[in-house]
Each structure stands twice: as structure tokens, then as C-alpha cells.
Image 1 (cartoon, rainbow, N blue to C red):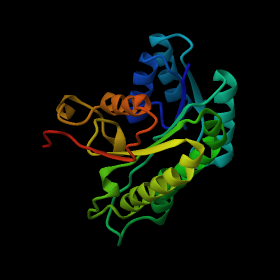
Image 2: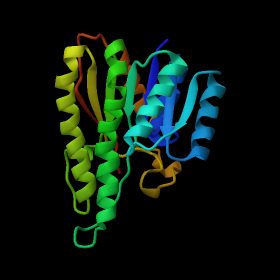
Image 3: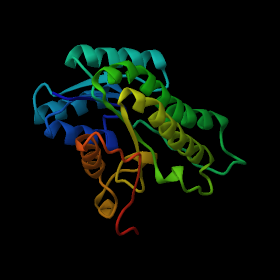
Length: 232
């Protein structure tokens, strides 16, 4: 039995990853900030395979909450084989009007939150010789107007993940970052709809995660860029 801890797992990319893993026979612990959406998500996952998922209310910006959630996941499932650090936010606007509170919300969630998640999971992953996968963005390699906070968080996440990869491999922990382009999710207050058919779908990222987890341990794709094949 393999177990994954997925932050931001109640919807979007995080839920897409969780569903793919559950269908493959994994156990998953998903986290999020809202109890109602978390409960709905893990009920859907357990409807696919009973006992396959637990939902934990935890904010990645709070290290103690992350540690508590990881400890509960390990107690429930007995081990931890993968961390999928997916939770993220996006706020956009020109620097002359951008609210400093939104800067901190972005950096604290997208960058510090991943640091907290990795730290909380690290000892368990050392025991299992597991896998850390961070969900970045093509915005971590391509800057754009109005993206000061988001670009900074995702450029930083790329650097953080690649450095952790060098630290962790001495413990036989694999580390990769996935950098998607446009994905059909609720990100930035969007409601997924039929017009999103051209975009990457959450389950596509889930299948990519699964491919990484199945790869022979001798091989490590440390950074993966993924984009719609026919963008609009």
C-alpha cells in the first residue's frame, strides 16, 4: 500500500491528482482550509474506493497545522510515500496598486507553505525513501506584467525544489517539480466550463504524477514543463 499527502486536495489539480492515485490503489490524505469542501472531496474519493482517503483541515501557511496533519496521515495509513505540494493562490495586478497583504498571502502560501509541507513530511519520507512533487507553474520561468507576486512565488518555488532535490537524494528521496500552463480549475475565481476543453485537465496532471511515481528509481525527471498542445 502506498500513501500520498496532497495539499490543496479538495478541488482542482490537487483533487485531480488524488482521484488518479485512488483509482490506482493509493491511499491519500488531502488537506485544505475549508471543512465543507474538504468533506465533499474525501467523500467522493471514498465512493471510488472505500477507506482510500482522509480529509484534513490544515492551512499550509501554518507549520504546526501541517505537522499535525502529516502525523494524523501517518497514524491512519502507517506510512507516507509521497508529498504532493499543490496548494497555491494567485493574485495579479500592477505593482503601483498591488496590495502588500496580497503579496504576503501569495508568498506565504505558494513558497513558505511548500517549505512547511516538505519539513513536516521529511522524516516520514526518509523512512519510506519517498517522493516529493511540487506543483509549480510556467510562471516560474516566464514573467508577465501584473505577475510580480505570482512570478516571484513560482520562480522561488522552482529554485527551492531544485535545491531540495540535491539535499534529499542523499536519503534516496526523489524530488520533482511540475510546471503546468493553463489548467481547467477554479484558480483565480474561474469556474471550469465547456470552453475549457482546450486546457490541461486536472486528471492530466494526476496521470503525470502517477507516471513519476511509477518511474524506475534510477531515473529522476527533476523539472517538467507541461502546456496545452493547442492553446487558444
